[in-house]
Image (tube, rainbow, N blue to C red):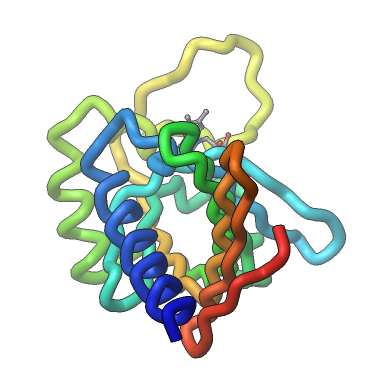
Length: 181
Ligand SMILES: Cc1cc2nc3c(=O)[nH]c(=O)nc-3n(C[C@H](O)[C@H](O)[C@H](O)COP(=O)(O)O)c2cc1C
């Protein structure tokens, strides 16, 4: 009984930390590695967590709609997001269902906030990400290719590293279990 209550508290704490990491640029979980597949091989890249909706168990990412990961996520929406915080000693492996949006209210309101900042240029290059170029200097573009990605969290594999003994737990939305690390 006590163990179950601990797991409940732990899951709530994990979501609080996720909400905190989007506001705190020094939080280790703000940047993570998103793994997807193109159907043949796995692909992985660093991304920034832009927003967290704990109640809906959803995370929000931004990307360029022409980037290869967008085609991968559209064809194969299951992915894994790996986060590590050295300060907490906590790793999260989040099984996620990825949905890309390029239009609609969520996209336009995120873009309205972003377009006033220098980071807007990340989504305005005239050439698609990954295009081979002759000079490394980025060209500036005038139209945006902004996309918002919602990662619906299906399961959280939590791992705590500590000198006294590691701990691991699984939260899949229905059950909470301790696992052997
Ligand atoms: C610290 C860091 C943060 C990044 N954040 C993002 C991000 O939020 N969104 C994004 O699309 N790419 C981000 N990138 C770039 C990606 O890691 C990747 O190089 C790029 O998106 C192309 O990936 P793809 O070929 O798999 O589409 C980031 C890279 C670094 C090093």
